[in-house]
Image (tube, rainbow over all chains, first blue to last red; front, side):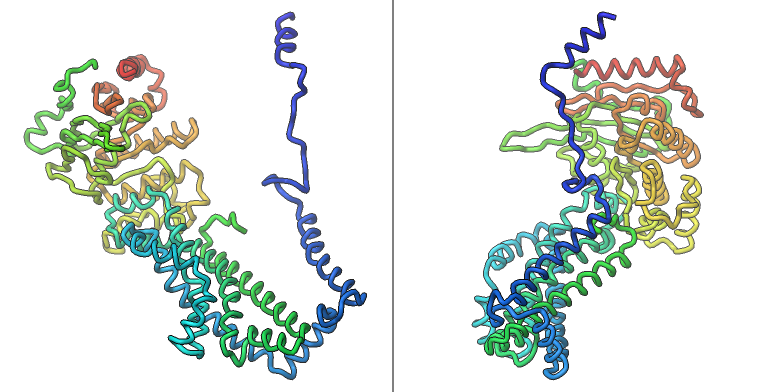
Length: 285
Length: 275
């Protein structure tokens, strides 16, 4: 009976043992209660709204700086009923869809090529690496000179803004395919064409959808830039026009509307992703 | 070095010698060497490796991690070109990967977007076999690996052992001349691993494919194969050949038999000489 007590004293030194303290709020990948999640979502939405209401209804700032929520909603109603705002929504959605679809087709193809072939990476890497850092804004004068101020100019601006991000992110996704997954196809009799179309494309498909979902928000950013250029309609145009007449309530409503459209697109693409890739691990909710 | 350079160059199964005089061996690895050049210095990874497999043989290569056995298998598969020497299947030199040498990898390499049945049919589809034959063979191999009930499941719904069974079925359904296996059970737990060994042995008894498998598990190598090659490191080379004089029909209890233990002792001693 001496042995255990000896070893006991040897193991237990003067410093106390430290254990990880349990925490609910600061849990890192240890599960999180649903109610707390919903509560925090509610709080994070409510706080800005409450602050806005207090500041604007309370008259702390002039209405020109920050109109009240009621003013914004009234302005929105007026725009929808009398100023044909839905037409602007339609026009803007069309421009985003056009520019983004083009950027998706070109960017995904470029990304797959860059991720798959060393040769294509060498060809595109210098262009992608430098042009990606050039602000699209700075190309606008050139675009106006080259293609004018019509719809193609707006689509081109959105396209240029997004295409390289699509390419880089898809190229990265291709590089995450394990080598053995490609080697298996070779040992089953596949050639490079089979590997590209039957392994690499389906393997990156979920990441492609993810990439597009992230980058479609970029397309809406460039929409406003595009509609700075002699547009006569569109949400970006409405914002700029309202700014000219100091109608901050209309500006706020249009910004909120873009946010709402973005949210709908995001949920739509997530649902599409789940429907099209039931085989994928749904780790990224 | 326990062996002079010339001694390990011709490991041949004595039983197949009269046969090989008529037919070329199923798989022949002839003086295969691999040298990598890193920062101007050549590093010899594989040194003049030669061996042969007769048709319907099951041969294992054992060696410590880093001895170059995976590189050797990748060269046999054609995925990595050798610096010197060549690999032959049925007497013909192979110049790259092809359907004649199917391979099962250690990691899970099933295609997650295909169902189990589609994964098994993948190679047959690449080779554009008739649809009816694809269906028949897929059904046959699903049955052989005992996963008919999971034909329409996706790989993410399977356990590790089931995934490897599908990977083996996918390679076999393509009916390769030689099946190459790179530590296929390395990622499995001990119980599943033993089940898979018994399963693979039964499968081999049914199909009689020629199999070259690498493993670092000596018991696994002896249990499965007729011959075991022992590899030494730095540079990777074959140092010993141990034949396994056990009956063809084996079950897991054989691992406890004196004969088995005698072979195991021989292989372990051969491995130890290398360190």
